[in-house]
Length: 264
Length: 302
Ligand SMILES: Nc1ncnc2c1ncn2[C@@H]1O[C@H](COP(=O)(O)OP(=O)(O)OP(=O)(O)O)[C@@H](O)[C@H]1O
Ligand SMILES: [Mg+2]
Picture (spheres, each protein chain N blue to C red):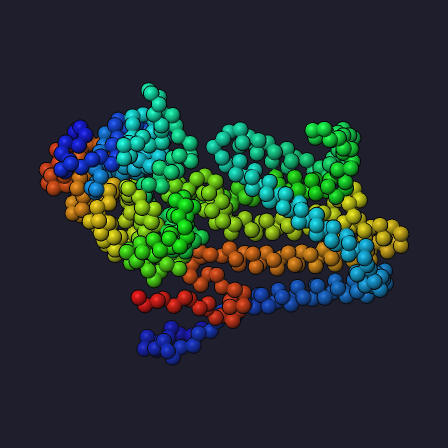
């Protein structure tokens, strides 16, 4: 097992830092002390077998799940808690909501709002959450839909779109909030194989633009090509992390070797 | 029986014969015959004085009764829907106090017959004779008139049933919608009001229309406390002229008119909430009849 990041690139500063994060559902411990760092401006891919706690960890980062132990910092701030002296006070929903709005999240099942058009999906959160004027929000939404190649689909409802189009719209909606960090939970796993490429292309473009991204994925080629670092989760622990070239060609732990033998 | 078509037969040469539904036709004929027979018995009955029915249809007392019935329905449903929604949200909240209060209310109200509740509100002055708010003291009987008692009795009862309808609607919405909204930073109230409830409407509207139609007729219960509704007036007229059947027919006529209008309203309301269905799903009755597809927004060529 490795410790926290042994080699970071240049002077990168941590955007997400987890120290001994624990999480249980009832009696089942799903995260058993995860130490994890994702640097600002980098793409971190989280890999690992099913049930390893990848989604759970990602959801802890924006406090969709409460952690039971350890500490989790995003951009230097504790997630979901306020520190006063030696005590951690759980934040009100309102405060949590404000911090969440700076973290974009993309789901396996897209989760576009079904009663809104694609354009409204991207406008409404800006207006309701960020308090942006509607005209400005509209311009930003149109700009991002253009960027993900959905300018002509903007007046469609989610169910009228293919999975790949829905996922690109969901990415545009998240980006419209101008997040500091983007979380992706298996964004291509629910897609037909021929639609995977269009979503990965948008994500690569985003990576090139310098967005900080944490991507849970089973797309090994994406991780190899785009990631600055990969983190391998198994059994509720971060088992191994490092540069993708090193991880894929020369994994240090037996568990990672076994995983790679199965998926490659 | 015909032999299997030769493989050489090309599809253009073949004619499509639609399945004929003989059973439907037979059923329709029987239904029409039964209705016609019943109407014949009713219309030709020597015991029904149709002249009286006609002359009371537009009677001012009857019309004022129709108005009161409509008012009661609207007021009771407004109370029922607002309080019912609140109860549903409470029931689904993380707060155990709110959950218990909501569940207790629904249990209690549903345990007591509606007629008993109406009588209870009507007679509430018997054990709360005076209402005192601050320095003001008023006799309960002044405040709780028959109409107020009827509105409270019907509305508070309705809230218990509406809360279950709204709760079912909320539960029908995929958790992913709530999660996505949370992740974007929507606050809990916004998630309910902007994301969940608007989508739940599709599930909530049909049973709610059912409740409205039920309420139109449930208001007739308040005739026991003389709340001046349609049935109260019809009965007070028939107790003077003994035309019982005729006035019940007059009342029925107006109940049928009101429920018909409500059903038409339901149709249009449901249509409004038919977003997010598959392409072509939101077609109007007319376009279904004529088979014309709705015009899909032409895609702009960038
Ligand atoms: N809400 C929940 N209640 C109980 N157990 C849960 C819940 N969510 C997840 N788990 C359990 O936690 C463990 C980790 O789940 P998680 O979804 O984080 O895995 P994962 O690494 O994302 O797997 P996958 O690759 O299949 O998505 C699993 O054993 C799962 O059954
Ligand atoms: Mg997962």
